[in-house]
Length: 131
Image 1 (cartoon, helix red, strand yellow):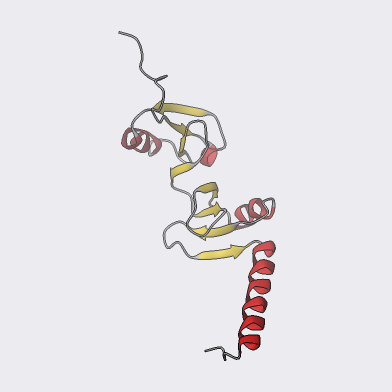
Image 2: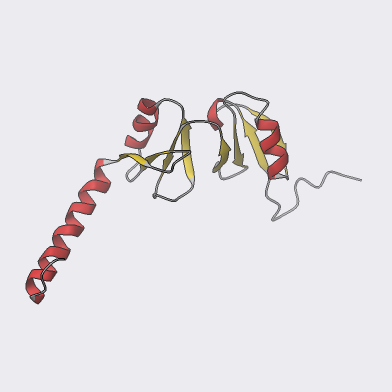
């Protein structure tokens, strides 16, 4: 019987070296199996084949597009995570264990400031006082 790894709709998981940026060491249709194999390779990550979305890693910091979004980059070095976040238009760096945001790309802060100003202007025009 032939391999079923090319079936349509079947998600494949890759164990990739160098926090998901390096060579692929293992591929599986089972996320738990890929996660177990990844534990044998220091600094590896499990990612979805085709999308590159990281679904498991042992690094300290994660770069995401939204505060709860999929992981785009991981690193144990905060400076490297911040540098990667700076290359993206909107991004956050969060700690893996706590989920705490430790760095926000300046473009996000600018949008938040504009939003806060628009809300304050709207409240001033409507006669409502901010709480």
